[in-house]
Length: 135
Image 1 (cartoon, rainbow, N blue to C red):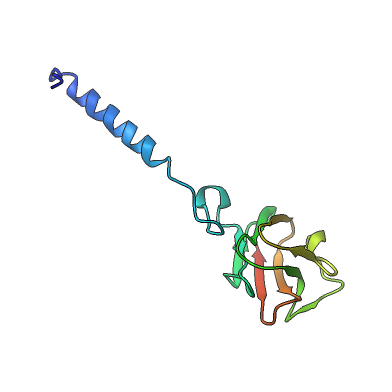
Image 2: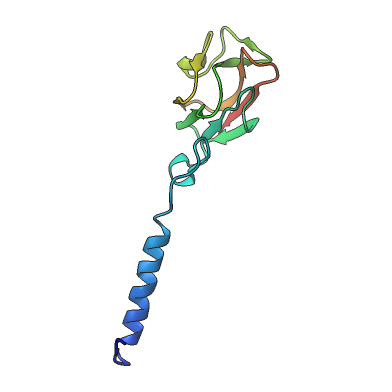
């Protein structure tokens, strides 16, 4: 058994606590398609086979919004509603016109620099709509 002097006990307890906290921060991998809160910072939209996991998200101006299709299927995302793109919509370039395609296991990200409310839709899946509020 290790003998520790009474004067060294507080330091040993502090060192043990520091090691325990450091090990707790070394968590394992997250499940594919699930948020990793340390790296995603809440600015990730997850896609399923026929919908967005969440139907609205709020981000700050200049923030990057990630689209995670790790566990989904092919999607075509644009500014618009109910499977119709708005041809002259103001939005990040990748979302204008016909928008962008994404398929598993892709993750794509785009910066939203201008404040506003953006309605996004998938032209391949009915009722797949997302509202992005930038403020």
